[in-house]
Each structure stands twice: as C-alpha cells, then as structure tokens.
Image (cartoon, rainbow, N blue to C red; front, side, top):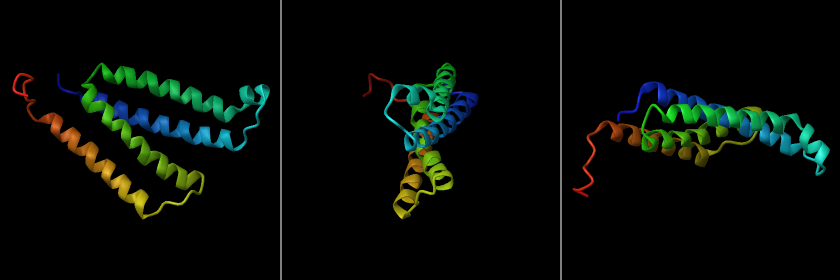
Length: 126
C-alpha cells in the first residue's frame, strides 16, 4: 500500500500540534505548584493535554492512509518544531549542535521517505 500525500501532510500537521503542546507543557511546568487544585486549574497543562489528544486523533486518521514505517519517522520532525518554538517563545539558546541535529533529522526523514518510493524487497529474499 502506497502512502498517500494527505496522510503525510496530516502527520506533519500532527507534529506541529504536538510541538505546540510541548511548549504549553513547559509554560505550565514553569508555574507548577504541587497541589491538586493548582494542577487541575493550570490552563497551560490543560491546553497541552488537549492538543496532544487532537494530535493523537489526527495521527490515527493519517495511519489509515499510509504505511506506519513511512509515517512514523515523520514524527521525528517534532524535534525540529520544538527547537525552533523554544528559541522563539521561551528564548532558549539554539547552538550549532542543535542545528546539526535538525539537519540530520531532515536528512533521515527524507531518506526514509525516498526509500518508501522504491520497490520493496520481498520477505522471502531477506
């Protein structure tokens, strides 16, 4: 089964939502007080949980349209989104090593995507 373009785009969108949820988690954690009332009224954490639920639903829908071995590696792009969003929204430093990591992720996901277009080797050959 070939992976459909809409499934790939949906996974990429899902990673953007998941990365946004991570930013909300960090904001919630910065203001975290260890009592139950504050935990359930911490709107940053609640928004983060809601975004994770939405992203999970979108991922499940995307999996219907493609191969898991092609779609799941795309989730690694969330590391890219989180690094960029952390630098922008949280003023976290981005150094050369982070940029090299981002380049490696892009290359790795691209290789997997390109490899999925090639003809698969039958299991009995392996």
